[in-house]
Length: 238
Image (cartoon, rainbow, N blue to C red; front, side, top):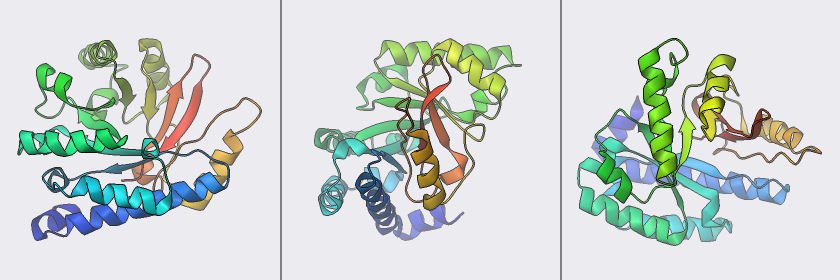
């Protein structure tokens, strides 16, 4: 509830930079434990209008000695339409640095197929409103299947948000979805608990954990499909 207030008062910039700072600090701590753990942080519309933001992110990456490929920044469709030209310039600088970009809540905003092609994102996240009932709602299932096919044809990785049941998980695996996110995989936990969980995943099968910014925010455990269950988990820090 405090996010809109932070946006209106101008506090969203220091708040976002603080979250990125803490996420990268945790990422570095995991690296020192032998865990290669990417972290994800959500951006505000204000961040996409701030031309200094990419350099500030770069300074934090250098501060924590973390490679840009281990930082994923999530944007929403609505955040781009406020000022598309400026937003694309900021996003272009971030991707030029090697930072990964993800389009969050896809399907609920204003992104056309043409604009999706132009966005420098490497991943789309299908909004949970289409995922939750897809095993019983034929229309939702069609939307999810079509979105997966579209994204894959554009060379984008696909994440399904709001996966809460095994049936949904299995259906998404059958459709060729790359990653799943939701309470079926993991509830919110502290960084310490998540560290133990990720360490347990790094067993003889070579499963690699990926994580969030201190807490597995909003229960967003994420897992990759590999035909034999999930290959890796990702706790998305919001």
